[in-house]
Image (cartoon, rainbow, N blue to C red):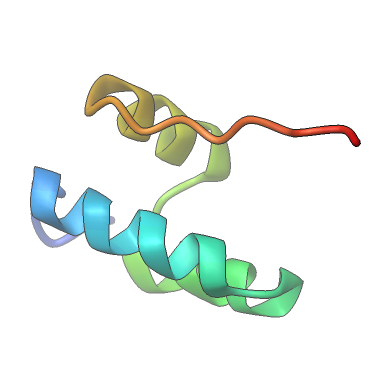
Length: 56
């Protein structure tokens, strides 16, 4: 269980770390912040952060 609710600053920091992390790093971030990936994406979307796939 999470010790406290994630703030907008936490989410922004996590989004930056998420973009820089490889697959194993992303798993570690989810454990560190004790959050599931769908919940993370939903929370980021609430604060206006979305990742889009670009196909070249």
